[in-house]
Length: 252
Ligand SMILES: O=C(O)[C@H](O)[C@@H](O)[C@H](O)[C@H](O)COP(=O)(O)O
Image (cartoon, rainbow, N blue to C red; front, top):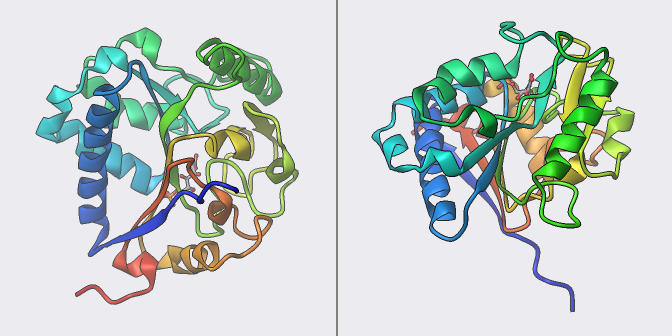
């Protein structure tokens, strides 16, 4: 008998601000829950407007002081191939939104190397895959992620996995290089789809009416080539955190 699929829940918040605040608090509480049973706890952050707003909310939420940050490791679902400190980098936004506001040891922040460290996105992806393996359990390729956070693009992309791209067919665990991202900048590094789906929980964030079509297609079962977001599932939970506009409903 095959195991029951993990539940997929959709939480609709009235607007983008409440979405960010609720998701930020939920993130901190989920870290606390995870720390009550295991340490270290590995989490995957996302770039983008909603993901960054959520991290900013977590960065000022009083609950952040209850987390043992020395036992938290952060990773990125994708990164733009830009040098350290560049405003294009997801890392730069995450640091100013949350990471600089909490006592997270520098060695627990696993950044994707940029052109100031390696020669190409392929080299960056290989280095990130090796870093993931180094923090995985014996015999595993990637850490046991407690949560993967993902912003959803208007074309239903997640991380740097875009509709119609060969990257969607990559079955290996680890990171890959994308050289032709339709969302600028073109050069990026992304975790693979199976890596995102290896997490215990996957959260997908979407706000604004520009995301309504992507959310409807993803939840409506569109094929992965059309709506990569719909193909991402956590092992225990898949949580869609959206605002009313992205859900296509009028806010009450
Ligand atoms: O590097 C990036 O651009 C992202 O990680 C990307 O996957 C992002 O999360 C979505 O495009 C949603 O971004 P918005 O919330 O800004 O629409």
